[in-house]
Length: 129
Length: 219
Image 1 (tube, helix red, strand yellow):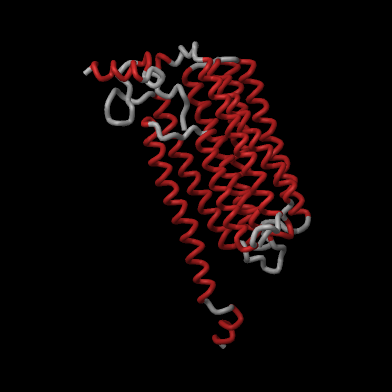
Image 2 (image 1 turned 135 degrees about the vertical axis):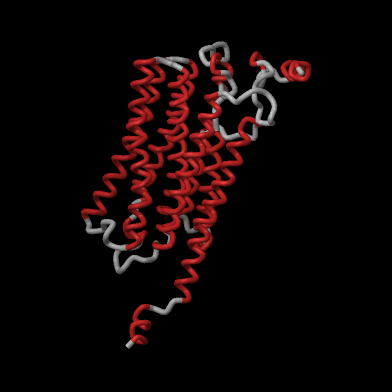
């Protein structure tokens, strides 16, 4: 996620001149990221309002667009790459995603089954009488 | 020892270039990683732990989304136009933060301050829009105490709003530090952390507007 000067030594931090073409590439990266993110956002709002798509499929379509846009943000704004100096960041991200997946899908899964298996409250109260 | 490194330097001047062979490349070779890499990695770990907190709030919201207790459902209270403007503000803010990154790399004080000001103003616009939404809901009697669904909603979206507000304060201190102390390496590292934080908040907002607002209006 870090930047093009990541691998500079501490004492080289004050010597950043003479790389203007790299700056231009950087600007292009941000502009491309902004364009892609805007496009995906517009697509998400369109999906939410349209009736073209089969209704039960809409949450999945929105989730897919959201994941795509988060990926765009990670790559173009947070500069997450597959470069060797980014390996640790990628591994940490993978672990984070594992935890996030366990928490969200685990909670939803368990609670949905609890809801399904539990008796409605009124019925329960009647049985206790 | 120096022979392979010299070959790499010629083959790939942009990656190694003048920095010589004593740089850690993440494969166990070279010297210690630079401070900037280490700071970035540490802050990335913090952001990932923050994302686990958000995941818990998302899970709570997903579980409670149907528990409206006779109160309003998601599609009764969400206004997509306002959400679209909020999204635009935060995305623009993220982009301006990237522009500030470039200005800092070029050591241009004026451009840095202008880009950071634009970042802050668009972030502030987001917070004002969100506050207006919360105030309107509260005014209609749909505060966080109305139903479990609204509790989950206010906790999740409010937590993100608090993060953005804290980020705005941080942004103010960054502008002051660049202005008063210039482009020192340590301040550059602080700004690296800030820009990661700011982009991360935009990532969380993508999940919120897609999975809370947009999905909510169709359920």
